[in-house]
Length: 271
Image (cartoon, rainbow, N blue to C red; front, top):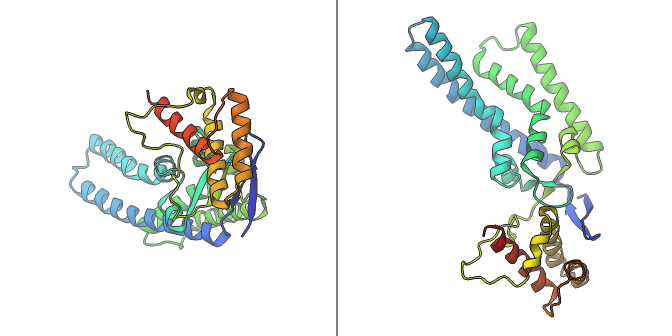
């Protein structure tokens, strides 16, 4: 399994496992199957509504609006789920992969949007799904043949980019500065920097708010990696650099110090 080292803002490299190609393919197939069955249900709903309409000009506009609303979940499937499920669609969740920022943290909403806008192959696959769900003469005319070839062509292009890129990135990932990684589904460490902190919690280091969100994500990634590898030197190095940058004096162990910083951030960022 390929491993990449991602440099953080503290000049400490964090290792991530790049998912095998078959795992990404299975993830895509799961999402496509879900989208297909949704389309079948949506088409039945649309047909039922159309049968009850009276064929007037207004009703035709209404049907167009209904059709658009029913198709929106397909268009928004990936971007909505990845934003709300911390970089995962249903397929990604099943196969244990996730989208992260190149610096190891959680991508911003704008990064998820860039990935979504550049999901060219998925758009063509969605069009192919519509034809599969609605056209009984599928494959018998030039239009459907073109859609099939276009969908396959863009899919092959994405596959070539993923397999040839060091970080397994396609064009959307490259421009959005995101990567896909394998995650340990049995891990007890939170998947995001956000944690539940008691209202009675007293922050130890309010200076943490001087750091950017990117820095906080880097601290979280370093802490996870250091714990996973029991790497005291990595945790100590990060702690020393943060203490020097924020002018903090503390006798806490490196692991406790980094954990406290994350708790302080979570408490102070919502106050």
